[in-house]
Image (cartoon, rainbow, N blue to C red; front, side):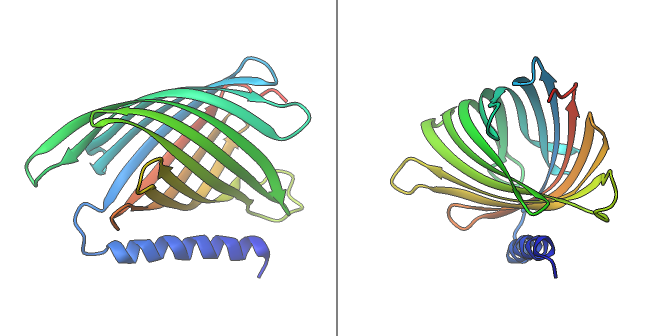
Amino acid sequence: MKMKSRLFVLFLVCGVGLALVAQGQPNTINHWLQYSGSYWFSPRWVATTNLQYRTYKPFKDPRTGFLGAEVQYNLKEIPVTFGAGYVHLFNRNYVSAEETNLTNENRFYQQVSVRGKLGNVGMVHRYQVEERWLTQGYHTRLRYQVALRIPFGPKKEEQRPWYGILRNEVRVIIRDQPFDSNRVFGGVGYTFNKHLTLEGMWMSQLAGGGNHQHFTMFLLRHDFGRME
């Protein structure tokens, strides 16, 4: 079995394992829709808008609304990108089977992304710092994500629109008990053209206190003209 196939199977096994642990627990499967639109001002500068809608049931029973904007700068000589952005979101949580409460968050963040290759597999390491103003108060959160993009199809094909997606992200908060959550993603993507991509994934999240949650995810990425 090739290395990329082994990595793909490993991440899928991790995701399935988290899903099995969560069986029998109520409200553990949620749903996530996202749109990301990017506009390139130059070969180095790009602005992105992110919209998310997360629900407890497919397309209804809202859980989270997310509106964010980000600007990035791509270095010329090395595969490194610097970024910064702002996010506003609301979270609707169930207090009981009939009652929910609504909280809001304002968030600034800064990040560094390092791109690389593992054979023909694309790899991105992302390091992020968040300043979060929540209804409950302020805290700083650190995030690290490693993401793999695995092309499918014979190597001799010039265009291979299908690809596999594998990601793992760890999030910690600067406090006495720092662990916030760990997220494992697995799925597939399809590139319609150089401007439009659709991704479908399963995400399993282990949060502090041993709470497991899972999301079906669909992401539409719209690139308004990438400049090399």
